[in-house]
Image (cartoon, rainbow over all chains, first blue to last red; front, top):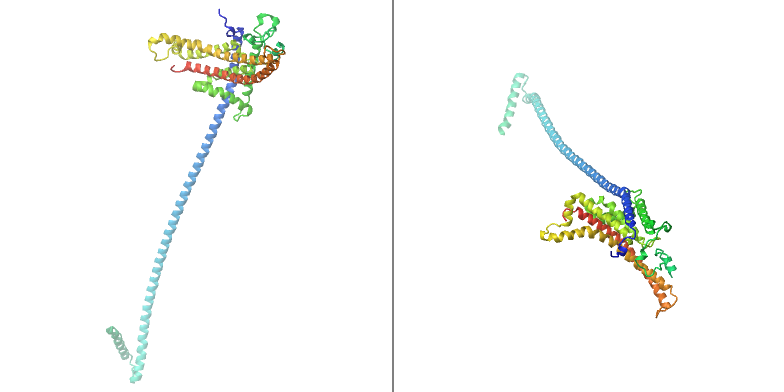
Length: 173
Length: 279
């Protein structure tokens, strides 16, 4: 048998001791050390993922709040516009109504005034007719010296006169 | 002379051995209880340091795994950095989404090898445990069993053997060549290269350290000229050698880390190749 020198173990126990020690280390690391490290890593991953999820949630909430706010703002704007339109329409209606009322009123006043004027005119005419007739008869009687006490005759005369008076401007116009 | 160098490098061989020149015998273990006789020779200093290494690994990891919080403190941050080195850049890269199943194995492998390798440069031992090839064989055997076991469990024995010895698309006349080669590569070469790579790097590294430290000490302890070499020259050379040994130590620190890393990465790769859909 050739001499293997240091390539052969000095004691076979070296192999056994090496294997046994290694197996013990393996066992301890597999039971205690590696699980501890892996658990730490898993917890760290979970913590990071949890933080990211929390951030996502907060972002979603912020976005929802913003959307809601914008929706409210839009509604408010719309309402404001509607109110403004309403007010404008109401204003126009009021103005139209007022105008209408004013027109009606003015028309009524005008009609009243005209009626009154007509009435007063008629009355004045009537009064005039009586008074002017009297005055004219008196005046004419005084001038003519003719007694015009005969009422019946004098009234006819006056009427005839006034009729002629009334007719004259009509004919002229 | 021998007194001084064995004081500096206490793992030197048996009492009457001068320690110079350093050889494979410089790596011999010393029984902890010589009075018990050769039957208890296995209870030696290197086994003790392997046990202490394992205790350190377990203790440090348990300490680093204690009282974790989502926001890590300094201790937990350091623990996570070390843990992530194996978890992310070894296990997850090689094994994909199912890496958690194999993570304890890889983490144990990496930390056990790293601590024992650092024993070569640090602490009180000044001897890398895995320059005793038995320990390297032990770990390689574990990895060998692991990657074959997961392969057989997933594919069944026949399918697994076929997968590991016959790559797809090989024309049948080449089978006589390919099948023995693949078998040799996947079932013999893999575990032995794992063990030998680890062992040889640390063995050679420690041997270089011994040469520098012991040789420099020897030169510095010279009191008579040898041939044309004056005492002053030899003492100067010894001092320079001691200074250089620090560079060697730094290199060994790097190698200690690299070898632990490679062993772990290759284990992950072997497991991944056993589980891979097509080979």
